[in-house]
Amino acid sequence: MKCMQCEESIAGTGCVRNGVCGKSAALADEMDRLIATLIELSAASRGCGDAALLREMDEHIVGSLFMTLTNTNFDMGRIKDAIATSDALMGRMGKEYSLSGSDCGVDSYDPDEDLRSLKQLLLFGLKGMAAYYHHAYVLGAEDASVTAFIRKGLAAIREDLGAEQLIALCMECGEVGARTMALLDKYNVDCYGAPEITQVKTSVGSRPGILITGHDLRDLEQLLEQTRGTGVDVYTHGEMLPAHAYPKFKEYDNLVGNYGNAWHMQREEFESFNGPIVATTNCVLIPKDSYRSRLFTTGTAGIEGAKHIQVKDGRKDFSEVIEMAKRCSAPTQIDDKVLTIGFAHAQTLALADRIIDAVKQGAIRRFVVMAGCDGREKGRDYYARFAQELPKDAVILTAGCAKYRYNKLDLGDIGGIPRVIDAGQCNDCYSLVVIANALAEAFGTDVNGLPLSFNISWYEQKAVLVLLVLLKLGVKDIMLGPRLPVFLSPGVADVLVKTFGIKANSEPASDMVILNIE
Image 1: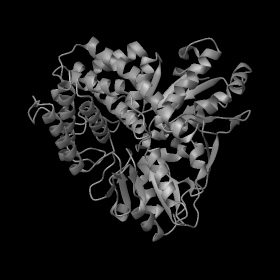
Image 2 (image 1 turned 45 degrees about the horizontal axis):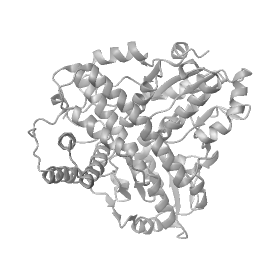
Image 3 (image 1 turned 90 degrees about the vertical axis):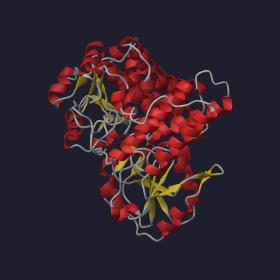
Image 4 (image 1 turned 30 degrees about the vertical axis):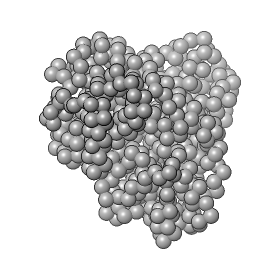
């Protein structure tokens, strides 16, 4: 295997024996083979006039790309089934694969290190786009221009292209990525209402519970509907925390709180939860034996040996999960905090006058975007230290599980404006773009002219897409950590540094000087 798609990838080589994430070399090889089939399908689809076949192909490509995201699917059988679907679709087009089974790995993308690096940057951006599009698709959204670009980008990975062409494709990926995130934002709001400022408890009750993790709000909706009146409570975990801010979910009194922290702590927290866990998308780890029998997967998530809940007639049946919960003890309390969430763009812009006044009066002197992914390395305590060492007149704008490094700290407020403005999931990073653009318009400048700094943590491929979106929007001087991606060759990294001012973090005090935070 050779895998370098996530922040944990072993520096210098990537993961070559087993993934740090836990996937085996055999599983990594099958994922490479699956991606190779998607690339070939995309190239073969050019000129296809069968709209129904293209739509079926797009659904397969999007779902399959999502399954290969870090910490999403560890089920070899599901990956092999996806490859078989690729084979069938290729056959229906009357086409054959041009690559042999040994031509699937990263090194086959291009012999030139820099061109190969740019193709990896594009591929990982496409994976992130597929994930965001999939979230919107399950809510009823469709945009053929997004899936057409995904096929265009995949096909380009095997083409003989120069650096300028590949850079242009990466920037186009950022442009289409912004549209994809806007589409997801629209459908989240259309389905569940605009998020509102909401306080969420992390304590537990005395009734048995079900824990739901991942990102899929439709799965949460169906679970809540089916658990009504059963005596079973539902708790969110990780990236599901922002669901509490949507008006639709406030209608369910069986949605009682948030349990635990970011994804990387789940092996301990799932064990102490005592009840069943439903993993809906990415950010699921291979479980301990102590709770393996209580773990259910659905959607793109997969764990070998775990029960997988399929869609049947447009619905998912969670009755087995609910019946198991009734036989389990209530969760063991691990926390007792109250979190303030719900600052998506509509809610934050409703406070725009207060925020602008606070800036003009000098009460707020700096905004710091600290969005992105959390991870398990000890060094990621940097983000908690950075948040604590920020001047008291600085406000943090966040989205994604990175916030778990500081959202339980008592950082206070500025004239009633919280110093941590939480826009939601990593899926909701679009809100931060809208907020930044609105502030820039209010002050008659662009985003780079605002008292705004970017100190972003990354982990997986959704974050790669968000980075490409920010670069396409012209955002400069982004600090990215805890280290730059392993898949960036020295040449490509140099271009990003010189063209966009990308920089790695070091220590909070020195980084604040670099970011012009006084």
